[in-house]
Length: 408
Image (cartoon, rainbow, N blue to C red):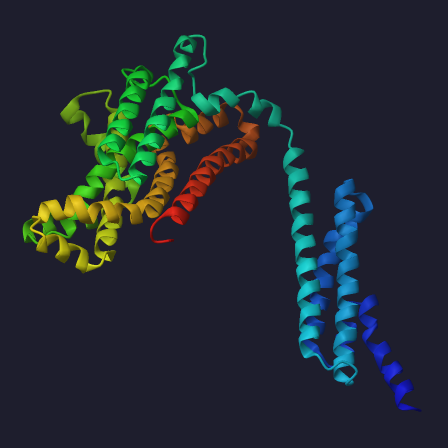
């Protein structure tokens, strides 16, 4: 037998993987690749073949492509390895590229098929109509009921807060601190005037709107408090530094649920009854401010010490140096982690439902009690609402991070 005929015969061994994925690699002595393809075939055939026989149209296409890619990829990879083994192919990297290419194709098609099957199962659940009938309740609680519908226009109170804070951020970026603060305060005050009757003396708004209100109030009040304690942790005065450290470490070391109950059970002794909302807001502010303080401390200490030394050499006092030199630069650097912390604050509002605050999770639990057969649909819809808001805020955080001085 000639060398050429021997090479052609040996090349046929790798082609076994076109029929049985991994068989060609095992015959050639590539045990690891052979076992990998064989295991993939044992897992993917029971998944994809039933879909090919009786699945939805797009599922059948994905399943067929998945099985075809598995066999073709295994065969081509085996042939490439065989050529390399017999000296017909000298580029070892080509064999690796072939394996990575087909592995990525197979993995991508597997994920797409699983997502398609999951989407068909979810959309085929029988109680979506009953859940969508409660959409308004998910967003605003009982506000659109006949009893309170006349107050629904007050939800426009979110608009001045968004406009004012956006304008404040725009001005702050251009080093115009006083106009930025004034714009933000005007927006917050107008929002408070419009939204206040929805919260006191009775909380008639609920759902996602209540979650946003709680997150907004927690963010607005925890930021200045966190700045105070964050600056206090860098103070040269031992008393101030010690008090700030105890505050931050204490509230960062206990769970948020404990903080909620701490204020929910004890605040009525100070402010009287019907202080449920105030207790929850206070718990959010106190708890979040401890984490904000740590972000502020890290931002201050990340600045070069030469900044402080240069300011002091120009005759500025310690307070002037902190307010005019250190904090403006530190706050620019702290914006991305602060936005991330406020995203966590928005998600933490779900825990306030344990004291019967009708934010989004509390409303979902109420709907669950009424539609007990739709548990999965209710909480999947709730999770998607949380995801939508948190994902939007995370995109804002990414944009701010790209524009921050640290990124530049």
